[in-house]
Length: 173
Image 1: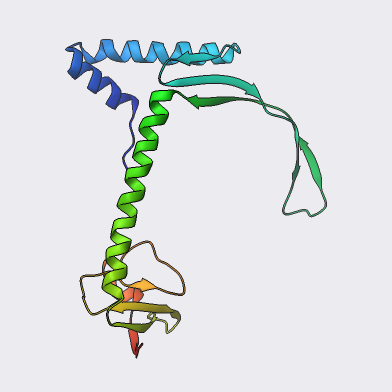
Image 2: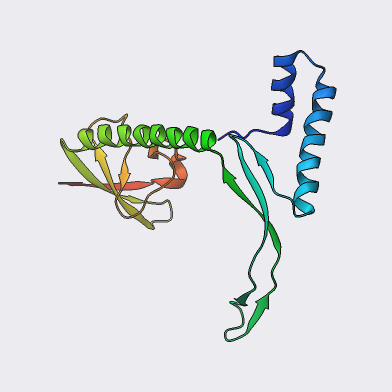
């Protein structure tokens, strides 16, 4: 997933306004510096329809060292910045979340309908003869296989052949 950088903002504003990028960079940098200095001076920053930045102090809390059971220490309070999204930003992000949810549900429904026909289970093992898991496969080779014992981040077709499946046994269901 791509991220928006300060450079991207400068280039976009420069293209929209026709200003020189160096001048736009100065304006953006001074804006960010002013916001930072205001927060450092315990002054909240409110940008309408974008959000509110508020400096706040965390409460002291008890911390524990996992390497030394039974020992505990107090983590002192520290200043942090809390951000509360504005109305327009919140609405746009909620719209995005609905769209992403619908997009995520669509392939799963297609995959389930493809798998529901005739499916087979394969026992996938690595090149060192370790059992990786049971893989539910479809008759359609273009569809993704589903690991039933655990999931992997990529489709099986994207995995390197030599490092993933050296042998597999077929079990009909």
